[in-house]
Length: 512
Image 1 (tube, helix red, strand yellow):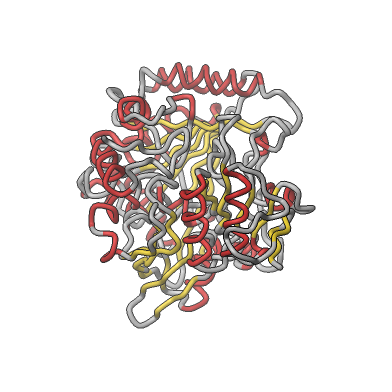
Image 2 (cartoon, rainbow, N blue to C red):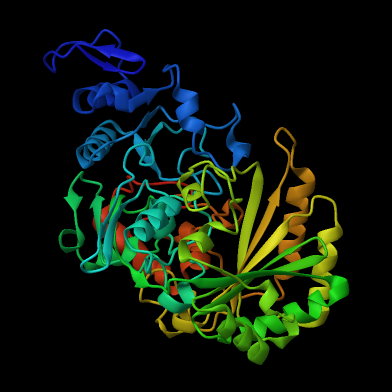
């Protein structure tokens, strides 16, 4: 007998009526799974630990409510054949799949549906597909989509402390979703985006397991920044590792408004995108303070000299410079020393810095915002429900890459990306926080990119539009994420998934 958690079925001929079956796509889908995937890897809504598995990597906890549409089941594959089976069963029975790696989709679209009547299942890659295989001979690595970037960083550096990989700053982000949206980070100005990968393995809408040669260059182009869950299920990525010095330098310097934060931030807009690629300075604005955080791929002495020559307004001194390994620098901004062992081992935690309920939005800035505008912007951080904004500079190597090289188009001419973040207490209605972020976003419209007003697909935002399955409806939000690359993505979608099986509220619709 075969057991799918919550549904018992006899392993007999196809023509036999199963005791738990009724004539519905949902039951037929579960029966199909039970014949192809070990029962311990499938959790249905009647499984005792279904809720625990579902909530295990939900980062935006506003979706941890009974009002959130739940999947029919959660498949936790341990190899590619299980993913292929889920796709074939899903297509055959009319049950769509959503794919989760780390659960950081800000709108929760990797594990929930906004459409209350939709019958869907979740393929959770983060449960079992998390391996990182480093090849020291050619400085490459294969990383499974379910691994976090913290796990990736740790595996790379423990193989060789002089090699690294350019990806994001939050160590609990899943590789699959992160890479699929482009993946910005503190080393992109030197080495580019995480999505600039060498190869990948993917299960397509026909259940085929394909590598780069098998999928072709158009699909390979699309998965490197075209957004997660659009073209298939990417199982693993081959990445090129980069050299880093044995010791890097970091600093965190806070400046209040009374200490000249407005003037310094106004100047930062001109300096940060033009700095050498070895140096990245991002800014967090919260309350009446701006926090300048830097990563320098070099020694403190050289960093102090560079800052004195190019950004003296910040007043950085050698006392504020912290030398450490690259691996330590990857953990420092987000994880405290001593938590879960050493600083480096803290990168292995998949729950560190667990988020609360919140709302996130994004913008790109192509012309520096004037000082007078920043004075008005800072006043917003004294309002009820105020959150914070994170400014991440582009420039450097990023500016040399054509906008159409990958789906991520925000390259030449971009000064920095803004992430607006507002959280509230679990159980609260979030009214003040959502009003704050909406009001600030409206104010910023006059200062950021236009026609279209750009956004970063990895900072998912349903406020900018949802599709109805037609390319025209997708254009509303698609051109904001992908600019001119949107229509090529829609053409690729039509070629590889013409029936729009991999579909969500902001998936790429096929260009019919």
